Image (cartoon, rainbow, N blue to C red):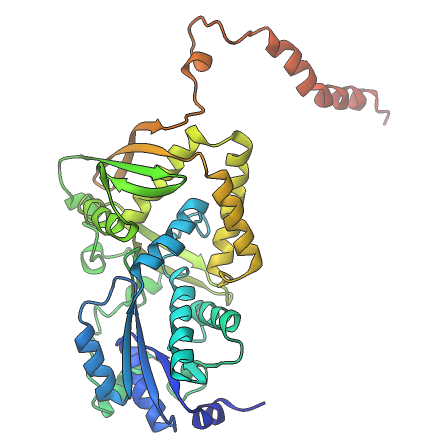
Length: 411
């Protein structure tokens, strides 16, 4: 089996997943220094790229022969984020999978460019401690098993962030790094995550003034509540406050609204795939509001058996996505089932946002399963309460027989 340095030196073209942050900025130079013939940097824009030209200039100046910035924010929301939303997927009951579900799409773009350029190697900047190495490589293997993948963090001599920063300094690689505030962050239009520094110890309270970018500290949020209305079509958000919007625009607008009211701060200690626990603070105002609204609409539109099974399925779905198994037959089968049982999740949900809290105001389902005629505490002509006697006798028969059997047991 070939060693990593051999694979690197023998490759014709290298595709590097490039963000312009510390890791990938260093890796471009390091690849050239360690024998890579040609490096093509690929930035995948999920709504986070602010200055494409600056990224291009930095990649070329670092030694890349070519730079791509591919905007896929619409595909990300429609085919990835909204699928997780319909599934109700929350890893360990909290994490809304903003990083996890982005990685398969990034991998898809990297493979597309690799095939276009005739590259035989893809390099990423994930560490050997994290989840993203798994997510990238499982997805690349599913799409292009013939392409090799390397992660320098797993075999180079650089042993930590401080050594990486020193390498950048020694090689005149420009970085925007401040020791006290340089959290490890991942951003797309669905979420913004923060890890590292003081957040590594769960005993430390997150300094929200220092951490937050999108969301206002709830204590400092607006004093006036705001009502928002979200319309869903078969489980997918299609309109905000009466305005039909494509998914990415709806999310962007709702991020600003929710963030201004302190909505969407998740402080989590999660179980990584590689076995360790990690702590992070996530900002996801739009996602938090959409999950809340979707769950409320489900209560009035889903068949009880389907709703119960959906809640079980959401756990398995989240775990599958978290572990990088997006491109698997099981995941495709789950999506097909979810699409079927979400067919009636159509209607409008009104919510009140206030200082970090979301309160339901109204649920207006197109084909509601809630019937006031049946549910009323007043007199009605549709439900015969005497029928409950026979139902309870049959429903409780197994319990009754079991209890009788125990009473006969001789000790």
